[in-house]
Image (tube, rainbow, N blue to C red; front, side):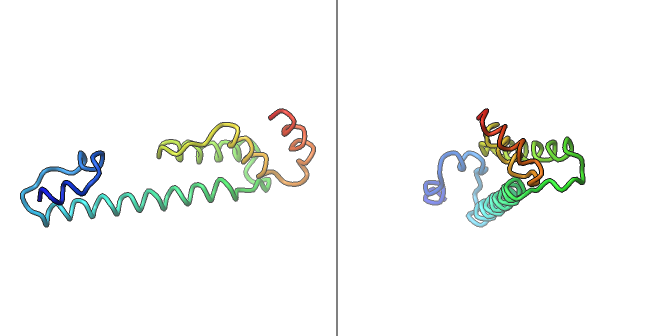
Length: 110
């Protein structure tokens, strides 16, 4: 058991309760690993949504922006850093070509 605990990084080690059984210890570690994999998968999905999202007129523009902000907030809650300037750029990139003058004008301010 001591060797098993020594091989795990300290910040993860604190999340694992002390057990007398190596089997119970490994089951708990496996559960943490599966949870971490699920979080990574969810983060990848959110990043994909943020980078490929396109405004098509349905929903309205404010609703579209709110959805993109919500996606960014979810990423930030997972300790992923997305700066406000990147968020603005993602929003601008998601606009249709008919918003071209707005895109060009807004880029001059960043």
